[in-house]
Image (tube, rainbow, N blue to C red; front, side, top):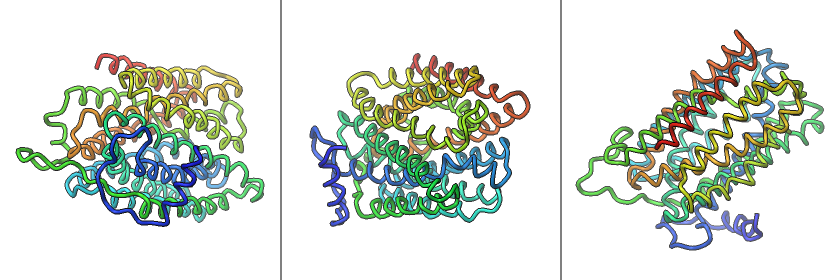
Length: 409
């Protein structure tokens, strides 16, 4: 990161900014976007320190299996989607974004350390349930806050920067886990405790460094924003995008299945954080450039390309029989994320007025989360009743169909 970002970080905690209006057009990203980026980095560092060790913890310590993975992750993503729907509605109704986002970061980082105390997979279920619910609750207000903090000409760059910082934390998290595990003599629980340090820093920055940006006032002839009304009067492309992304998400099961498949192909369990490191380095490097590029070319092109990359990666995981292939496929998986995560959010923001933006983000993520539950359950069922490769073939096919549909938008 540029040197001025580190100076910026040290100054953020020294003052409590007041609510204001979006910054004027400038080549540099506004202070608020950069603050949200640092919150994302610290929060994801805490998350990824635990996430890539979770399969090992569930299997070797708690004795769980693939169907349990599907149940835990599917339920967690479903409740996260419900949180997005509720918080998106509240953020537009109250015309406040920051408090809702900060509450989400706070609850998530208070829940994660409880993994160190878990004695059964059922307890892990409820911890992940609370963590993902809080993640969902912060997502729509945060995305609306990012969109409202910049002019339209910088929207792709702003979302790309936030995603880059988020994935930078996802590099730091697995790297910290890899370094701490030998230091703690392989005690996974101690790594879970160590994740409280970046988590606490994320909470402080979310409350004291991020400033409120009030959305544009509701037009006099418009009805109050709501989760479904938000789609009224917007570009019809929004609904087509939602259908395509929902189809894609039906095959987008939890990333824990990638870790499980990697181990099935011969990757040692203790190297799971290293897989996360490889994936997230690529994600970090390409997210911001992809966001900037989407400000210059149609965002649709990058999202379609990302879905095609995803299809190729999952086909590779299904078809491969060697652990070496895993180390080639994981960087491509990071490229898929870089091409789609921030760019898709910017594309949605382009089609929605400010006063309804959080609600639309909420509806989008609610639908995707509802689909995520059967996606992870289906992946676990296909794995257990057919073969470890089967869910990856299915995911590759669904993502290809979604790419075709988006290409027609």
